[in-house]
Length: 417
Ligand code: CTP
Image (tube, rainbow, N blue to C red; front, side, top):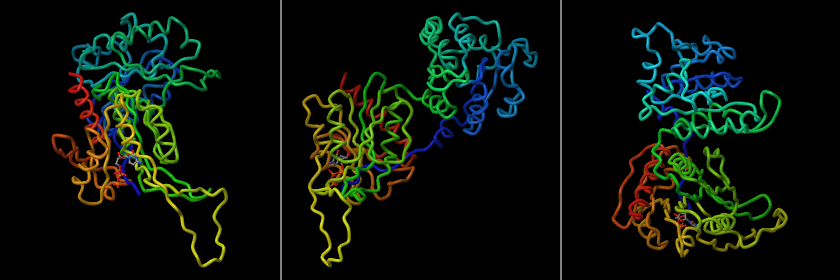
């Protein structure tokens, strides 16, 4: 049985990424303010310090008392606040901030941002922030008609062009009873997008295809051959590549991992299904990363009905046939993407990894000890390429995935130069 990359990463990661960061959390008016309270709590739990600033309209929906209790700091609500010795809250508040995040951003507040207006503390500090080191993120929340209105879309395009990152919005049931676009993202989604915003966009404009998890080869309708791969490493790489700005397609075997934000996912069962899904897409992608633990063999026949015990002392035998090698096939395409393979071994790691690199004709193989990494949240990787080997020391899988993505991006740039 073939066992490639195992592994995973949960959102313990937000804690690693946001610990010690100072975030200005701005609330403009809208019913989604109730979600901002939860988001403030998530930020604090992740170890960030949070300074809440509310507009007058936001205070109609939720009190500053609630936000102070959750953020553990007094809330700022107006530009004439005399607490700052220099009486310049609009300047002071962003000077130490890693980001200003507007949750929710109302249609009116987006209009203000688009025009560069500054008649209340929140819009004032957005304008006065040091834009090169303090990015602005906005999470729109409004009724679908307001969202679709050309004026809102015009304002949004302007705000984007001025450098802001727009988070969402999502689609679905709205507080007004209607259904459509304009629903604010959930706190966990906002947190993932904020974390992603701090990652360098080394794969912007690139497309990446990735396989992850085990495959399942049916013997009969209830049984099958599979392996212990959790898909965690592959999902972490998909997330890291999306964070780096790539358009990511993830072909996943049967796993229990949640899809990373912004990643297109195609679920498959068998190696043949994974092969078909990959081959349909590989040539149109810039990078192919094969982390899946593809079953090397499948039962030659899958019976229609469940195999039953018959009392016959002669046990049933299962004839196997070989599955196609997905990575090797992609690497043979005339217009092949940049191919990265994984090798999960139980012994002679580097010897096997070098052999696999040559046999599958891929520029980069990532070697790891299979039994030591399956289902774990950390790992040690060794990059094996034409020039030799380099170890990425033990770390959580998302950290390793980000290092691997940086390596891939550097190799693509070198190849293009
Ligand atoms: N792989 C693949 N299709 C297969 C088998 C493997 O795409 N049918 C890919 C894996 O996703 C991994 C690499 O090939 O990137 C190496 O997989 P591995 O299972 O370690 O190697 P095998 O070629 O299966 O060799 P062996 O099982 O003998 O170690």
